[in-house]
Image 1 (tube, rainbow, N blue to C red):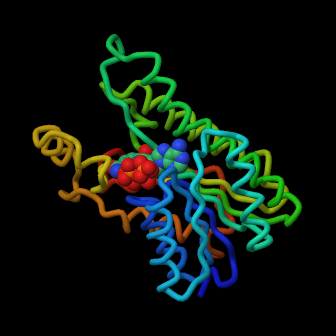
Image 2: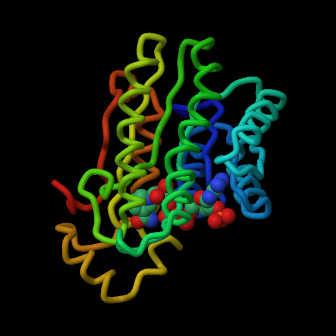
Length: 246
Ligand code: NAP
């Protein structure tokens, strides 16, 4: 098992892509910290992780809150004594056309999709710097590369996450820490379920591989980036989008 004995923290892993990443990392040997704002979802995924034969802890914490992030990291250190892999996955959408977008919609999305990644990276980087190793994986989006009408807040947050990824890679690389981003396209989760049929069909017409992605398509890349085969890759954005953006 590539990741045997390592400890991975995945934010927002109570469902969707985060859950798939957590279970895939566990499948490759890692022990898991399952974070979500909803305690019950985190507990369910932690139990699923244990069924795979790994250790898991569920931590209900809002990752936009610096004190809550630090408390979470301290509780992980008490239990496992280390964090080898951080996946900044928690994210939301609050879509509206730019001229109709409220300040609240803008702030909520920037806070969860970008500020939370900064807070978690800052807290975990201190441990990784001491350990002189670590993997940080940020779940961005293709719209962070292209922009998207109706998603000024979301695309700006994901574009910011790409820049944060490259900066983190530059600052931490000399201590053996890599930081990369995965940019999913259209993946079947509760986030995309909410889209009207017409928008889904329009989106799928832009995918050369002709289907929506599965959460496991994203999880496979995260496992690769967390594992030894990716040790010479940092500061990169890997799109997982069926060819939607080339
Ligand atoms: P999802 O099904 O909505 O899951 C998002 C998870 O994040 C939920 O478990 C949610 O908790 C959690 N979360 C939200 N706010 C949080 C907070 N403040 N603290 C901790 N956890 C929080 O979304 P998804 O589709 O799996 O998306 C996962 C990531 O992939 C996001 O960053 C998203 O932007 C990105 N992405 C998704 C797609 C796609 O097509 N699905 C495409 C590109 C990028 P609750 O259960 O409490 O809401």
